[in-house]
Image (cartoon, helix red, strand yellow):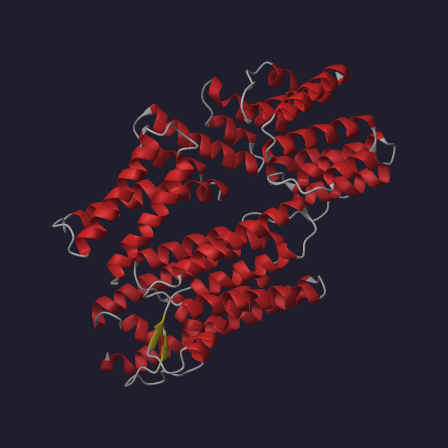
Length: 513
């Protein structure tokens, strides 16, 4: 299978997965899913043409363009919102989608992502008519606008009826109307008895019961209800309910401790509310979990910059000149210093094609910020270095007799994924159990793609192993910022050594390229 055929096969698989997701945002025969289906169909036709089954060679450029616009763009929108680039995301929607149904479905996606990071202002900016009232209720709840929340037309049928009734329970409790909250909770329980009894309904019923017990000051009952994992519920929201229970139970010191945890884990849009509670108790603000991920962004930009330099080298000295300069080479004859140790690091900064660099940069920035928000930037760089080096090392062991040119940041990215998995695996928090399941599913998909020709299975496997190794090592070390700073400094040093050595090699041997 050629690189082009492999790329088309991946685009077909990603397009099918994206279409299955997008039909949840818009009607099945509306612009949003139909454009992604068109892009997927074009990729399938181009793949058939590449095997000589159809005389349609002209389709390939159209398929690549359509996949970029109508598969990659929609899937990248949540990343842009999490990076606070929601206006750029909205501009892309306006540029590539032209019907109200198509745009509205993606605006809902922007609103959902904004709500996940507690930004009610951004969410409300992109919500439209009455069909968005359920999302609007979530935004109002973040602002404690209870009366406006009750005035909304919330769903009364289907799975969303659970969310609608749970929102009304929360609003009644916020207004101190306990009798009405209890009546609405009874309606919610009756709905659960009639079915269907899925995870959405269970979560809505459990949270509503916990909120009512918290309002009554029954801390132990609240704690027991929230001890069961609730997928899709942010940790700070659980701390919020527990804090209220401690507050109503006249346990101010316990309430202050819980609100401190809520503040530390809350997105920036919600920290002000918990800061006010801590101020009322005379407590200092704890260190908040950092959200933006400056090291993730810097590393991503460095990899992109290196790829642009690689393109210049390839253009000047011929195809693969950049790969020979910095790639990890195994059993490649005629290349000076092919077995140099620095190549076990420098190969992360050269890539095979634009799609390769685009995918690695996207995942690095998105996953990297998640890990960096839990740990220090030094731990992020440590995971990247461990993953990169282990990817090359496992390739040496598994492919000792093969000719290999290993390029790309995939092993380093999987190192970060492995470190994040190690963190989440040992965490008792319900949201981390959900994160663990999501990471394992993602790793399984990457593992299947790694079996395709042209993709380094052992490089990917080594990166994951290296990341897990670093993740467990870091958990065994003291939670001391100076350790992370030391690891970060050493990681910068070894990466600089790899890149500097590659540059020196290029200047010494460029005449032979």
